[in-house]
Amino acid sequence: MDSSSPPLARRTQRLKSSLVRDILAATARPGMISFAGGLPAADLMPALPVAATTDPALYQYGTSEGEPVFRQAVAAWIDETGLHVQPEQVLALAGSQQGLDFAAKLLLDEGTPMLCEGPTYVAALQVFELFGADIACAPLTPEGPDLPALERLLAEKRPRCAYLIPCFQNPGGACYSPQARVAVAELFDRYNVILIEDEPYRSVALDVSHPMTPICSLLKRAPWIYLGSFSKILWPGWRMGYLAAHPALMPHLVRLKQAADLHTQRPGQHAVAHWLNSDTRSRDLARLREGYRIRRDAMQAALQRHFGKLADWEMPRGGLFFWLKLRKHDATRAMLDRAIERGVAFMPGEAFFANPAEGRQHLRLNYSRATPEEMERGLAILAACLTEETCTA
Image (tube, rainbow, N blue to C red; front, side, top):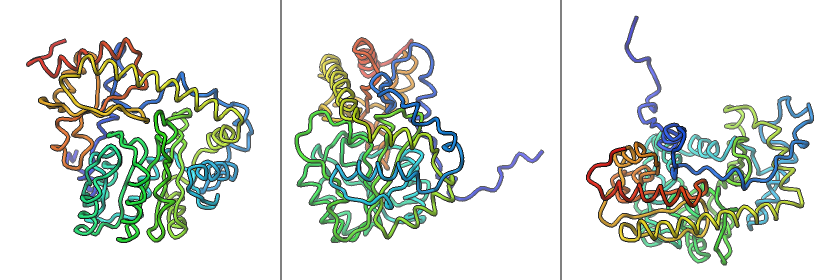
């Protein structure tokens, strides 16, 4: 039997395993305290509208673009943000990760220059690197990107596109100020850079008083793709997401959808549309935010007790994560392995940078799933793993 490797596309040499998904598999064992994934809290989700999914007609093939009722409801949902789109500009997705895949297929050839934030979403890096992007990263502040550094990169790299997460950025937690949003839009218009704006955490806003106007809505020249997800607020097992796009890009994205999976599952689209049009939506979101605020505050208190002398961080104003910078220690994959042996998981910062060495002193902690007691115990173990020369179970 020939044991040689089968002939594969060259890009598979760039295909990396997702560290988040690897950790989720490792943390499935009983008793594990996981601060690793971005899993939302099941107890804070609204009741599933079963009646909206029982029509037998929903279990036949559907259109690639999405169900009319879904596209209409999502267009209205996006309209509330200040980005005005027509239902014809909305595409139903199997989670917003599918939108990242489509954007990469549409915009990236091997060697195509593009910009991201530094740090940025680990699964976005995974797909952009797969398609061979030449990625440059603009440093982040709590109010948005370092604007002089961003402009230098735009002038030097001349990127085709940029990927940004302006609301409660994953992993850094930044929420762009109104001034930063306007400045970024002006730069992208000046350099004619296509914007991929990802907004999975917009609805998990806890302490923000200023408008979070999508940057896409401020663009006057540059094309754009706007991604959103319901997986952080509604039944993530449905894998329901969406994109809206500049009219010049929309026909190409529809064809990519046709080639990928024909259409997104129809019962989930109807369940989400039912919720978007319901009179319980505001109450459901208020309950979710209050639940996350309590958990966020509990982790902030536990971090102050156990990491106050070890790290610096900004308390997140929304989203699901704390982003820590260690003062003297590294949070590497080796340290993660030691922590998992002791029953605790986290995300090492090196996974969130195009150059992993930039993230060695960072770690990301999810606060949405653990109880206050688990936070207290788990963070004490993590602190010990950082400060002890060896960690044994």
